[in-house]
Amino acid sequence: MDPLAQAEPAAPREPRLEHSVVDGVATVVISNPAKRNAMTTGMWQALPGLLDRLAADRSVRVLVLTGAGDTFCAGADISSLQHPGGRPQELAVRAEEALAAFARPTLAAVRGYCVGGGSQLAAACDLRFAEEGASFGITPAKLGIVYPSSSTRRLVSLTGPATAKYLLFSGELIGTERALRTGLVDEVLPAGGLDGRVREFTRILAARSQLTQAAAKEYADGREDRDGHWARQARNSGDTAEGVAAFLERRDPRFTWTPPEARDGTTATGHRDGAGGPRGGGPS
Image: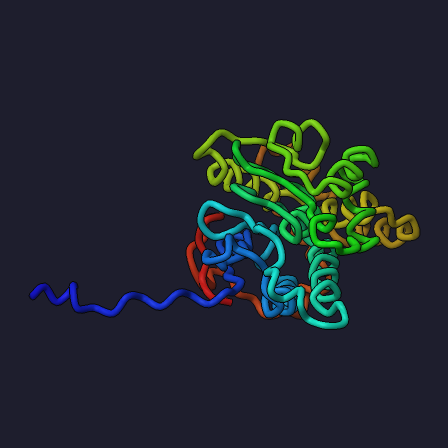
């Protein structure tokens, strides 16, 4: 008898967040294929700590969030919503805020379903690239859940109040064409084109000044009290002098400023817990 025929079937993989760091790009993969990458309570709890570790890594210049296989994230695992006292929603908001506060540029690479908590996480990223055929939805009205105020404000800032109300009131899904038109996503790629575009664009982001990016991220997110801080950082960083010199010498700049949380962190350059592309990943 063929020995392969006697082999035990592989056990299903536990829901988890997977991550890799390759060439300055950290990729975090939502992996729960049995439930279309739904976020479990444990995954919500794990995300802030994982983001803290990546923020402390000096090699990380960009973060990509994506889902395993052909789905981004179908939301929160519904079974977790039976938890008394609203604990899962509290954990989801904490994870969302940790993602929004990540000091480097963040990009959600979306294919398939991006629904509920998945849309919550995608909206917390700085940018969203989607593959044609992806579907977006915010579904608390289907479950009688009050969507968090912070999440609602973030959605309104992306799409405007009319589209935000459409999504929240109805729980209906929208496709990539409408998502692009309303500002929910920034780029739509043809089938098979998402991974290559994400690699290309993250290489661009990783080559730019982290000083410029960090200041711009704060200002774009509404902070208004740090002009003096960023002026001092610019004077002391050397990035401006390097950028001008590189331009005049027709070479690529070598920017050296790093966010404060990375300056004393451990470096994981070349560390891999899984595959480096948006569809890969290893256990965190």
